[in-house]
Length: 335
Ligand SMILES: [Zn+2]
Image (cartoon, rainbow, N blue to C red; front, side, top):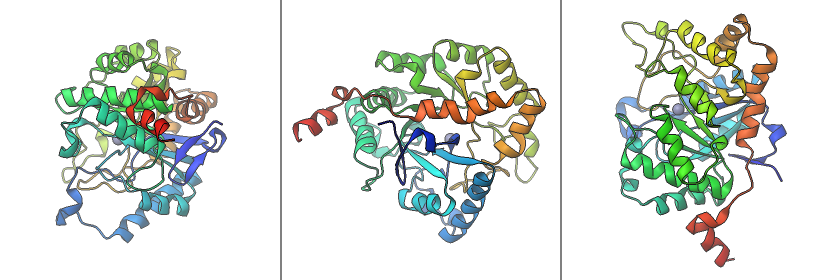
């Protein structure tokens, strides 16, 4: 049976609807929750988060993939409260945002260990719950793909093959190497989104064409981090980009005929943990970016493809190849 794991249990592909593929309830580096400077009463965070996701629902949004991963703010019971209150399906990720934000405990672990960990979170549950992850998050550390990043990539590929969930990446720098790693582990690139390809830093349309040609998906998923939003008191983050420049980039990709090889999302935090964000939310998609795309001539059929059809294709779990992971073998022998 075709299904997608969410924090409230499995759903069918038809229940996904309009899906934001790369979002966060709240991302923060490990330890930020202990810093009194950033400590916020939970009810205040909850109120703001519910307000944003209720608006997402009013815009027709039905599902968000939370790309936070292990140890950087992922909180299943909290997310369940939010999902129930708003009616938004939340898909949790296993994996790490990048090696440099992984908890130190995991930094020396082998590929096999990490593959087992991800596999467990997809097939048994996350953090002692019975909630199963629906995707794997991996990423490039600041300064480039590290040896740890490469271990995580290979482990993610094994877990993805063994379970049929997709992989979403943080950053599209060294995209070819990222894709090589997945292919070396036998993962078909049509299970992969190379994320943050619309970021100002390192934007490269030729690279995006290559991602599409090799069969992966381009993540135009930092929509709304516009340079113009920065103020002297609250400068725009370094990954921001002028709004018009991002639009031109994305439209050029679509005009080249690659609309079937992309997803759009905002990489927004409902409540960032341990850092300040400029005025930004997932609703930027509906309130600014999609109207901009339409104004540039993109038709509704393509918007439907970007928000509904392609996310469903990616998130629906494929037939697993479970003999690839040690945990899988153990699960079989233990009956
Ligand atoms: Zn993100």
